[in-house]
Amino acid sequence: MKIRKKNVGILLVIMVVAVLMVMLPGQSIAKKIIWKSSGHGPASDPSQIYHNKLCDAITAATDGRLTVKPFVGGSIVPVYKELDAVDRNVLQMCYTCPMYNLDKWPAAGLISSRPGGLPGEALRTWFDYGGGAALMNKMMKGYNVLTFPGALSPLPEEVFFHSKVKLESLKDIKGLKARCMGDGGEILKRMGAATVIIPGGELYEAMQRGTIDAFEYSTLASNWNMHFNEVAHYVYLSPIRAPSDPQVFFVNKKAWAALPADLKVVVQGLIDKWTQAQHEYLVYESVKAVDKFRKAGNEVFKVPKDIEVALTAEANKFYEEKSKSESPIFGEIYNSMKNFGEAYNAIK
Image (cartoon, rainbow, N blue to C red; front, side, top):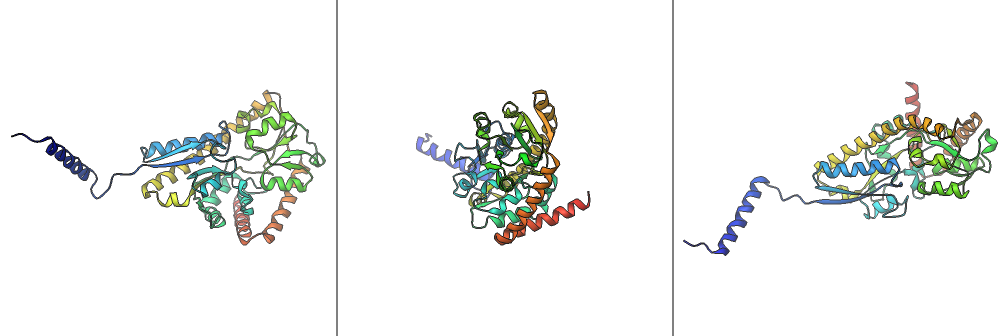
């Protein structure tokens, strides 16, 4: 008996559907999800490198069910505007410093390279277990963005300054043309420095042109890779201005809500892994980088004590003033960190 071609086609369709029903009982075929994510730094910055590693790891671990496409800072939106892009769902995820958003939330400076703040280990512990992530989400209320425990990479203390000018005492801060971001920039300005905001990828050229005399940026490991030894003879180290240099992963709320539960587990677990990995990598590489700077001809010094004392005093005054004048969330975060810091130091 001859079977018509039309009937053969129908039989094949029925067989395929039957196979799928056996393989996926009660389920529909999984739809692939594509996210775009951006870091905030140039391609050579370890934060950008680890951001990219994380995106690739999510794509691999989910077998492409969630494909996260990584973008370098400034390639999708202007650098430091990544969080605004996540809010608008132009990006579904980003990795950036909270302090780049002081225009929206003055309290963001408390969680980002804060003078006199928590050191890296304590900061991540506070963020993950001491309510820090929840407080940041409360700060961002009304914004289509969220974060979660494990999303903060504390990073080692920042370099205090790469400088053309030798800093021998507090008087050398007055009039110093320096790139210094966030609250640290405001505090140093109150101490007499002429601080400006310049993206990290533009610092090398700004030093060459003489636009600035000095700058802070990230860790020794990051800064060696960016060849800053070539434009600044002096390297000044101190944990006072930025005892940690935290960066945080943020996701779009609606994109996150639409993600299947099992993919949320994968994303959170991998973010937790890679943020901690970046921290440990930079601690190790920063230890090695000290000798690299010295061998390259740079002079590496500790910051003079009178500068540290003056900066600590000015920072305490600055934050006490702001905790009284800003919205309640500022004081809430400030006091939470202060209380945790006192408890943390008590066991040291």
